[in-house]
Amino acid sequence: MTPGDALTQEALTTGTAFSIAPTGSGGLRLAIRLEAGDVQHFERPASGSGADWTATDLEGAGGGCAFNEPVTAPWGQGLELLAAGRGA
Image (tube, rainbow, N blue to C red):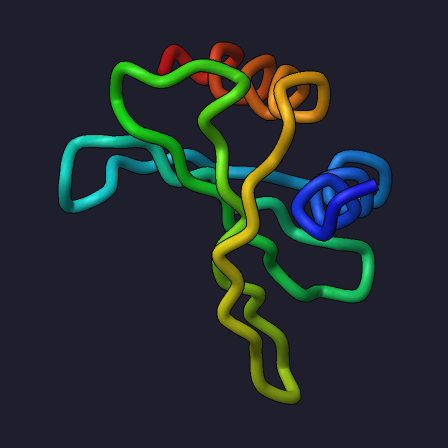
């Protein structure tokens, strides 16, 4: 499993809430709140699909991490379902 897929699996299986917003370049930014209260972010281009997601910033009370890890299409499909649920 790639690092991006591992971050996605964690977010999709332990996430308690999510939000979606546009990026500065017109893409999508998905934020998933994890059980511990941290927030994992994912981004994809506006015309992207499940194969175009990237795991990006992790925000937490004790600090954070910046990631730039691609997510494979099977895991990206789960992110697509969340994004489509909000009309993105």
